[in-house]
Length: 190
Image (cartoon, rainbow, N blue to C red; front, top):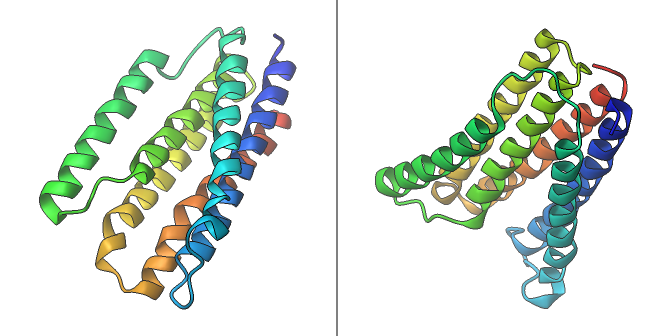
């Protein structure tokens, strides 16, 4: 695939991921609202399109990245996957042991999102769509957002209902915004 084709496919994948975040956010806003939450199938059905959109996003992005003709990289893909796995385990253990925070699917989703975003940044740099400063800037942005999302994840159970409601939505909004910005930057060449 040419750089333009890969970038376009990344954009499609990111749109699917943004849709995933939107459905998940809508579910969150209904099911966890502090007053009169909407439980059961009346809100839970939103997790079906969220899950489908997320799986499609991952498939589209990985498929495009595997077909990219890269000539350089910021880091090896296997190192990124290893760092993601280690990060997941460390955060799960630390938050559970230090703060008795139950390990939930959100941790996997947050870390998985960051790995997918960094995979795209690395590929766009490898195809010379992003220059090194742009790629490093986007990698730092993803890591800063990841850190913010992990803070939200960690403190959620220690907050009251209203604060938890807001903090629980933050990672979904931030993830969607970063993917939108990454899509725009990739389509315009950085």
